[in-house]
Figure 1 (cartoon, rainbow, N blue to C red):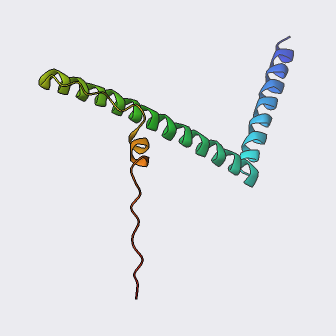
Figure 2: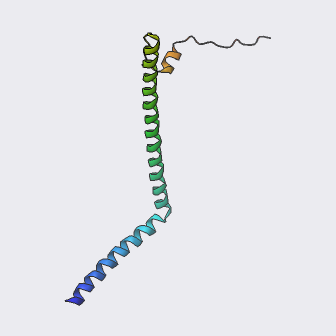
Figure 3: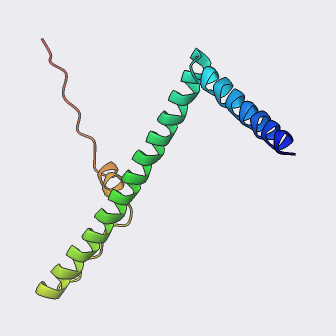
Length: 102
């Protein structure tokens, strides 16, 4: 009975080591390296996007705090810009340089 148990343990360990070695060998191939690199780039892009969203949320929160502070100290009502800075700039007339004549 002991021999059968140890035979089973040996078979399971052999299969596990064989699968691990096969996976390690696959990761060392160019396709495996490209897959790992692609995963790393996707993870980095997600982290950068998340960071940008947190920065924008913090900026919006701070802008609201500043509007509240100005309203409290001056008594003037300041409405936060909801369209964004670029939308307000796009309504301004476009100034174009004159062509040099001569």
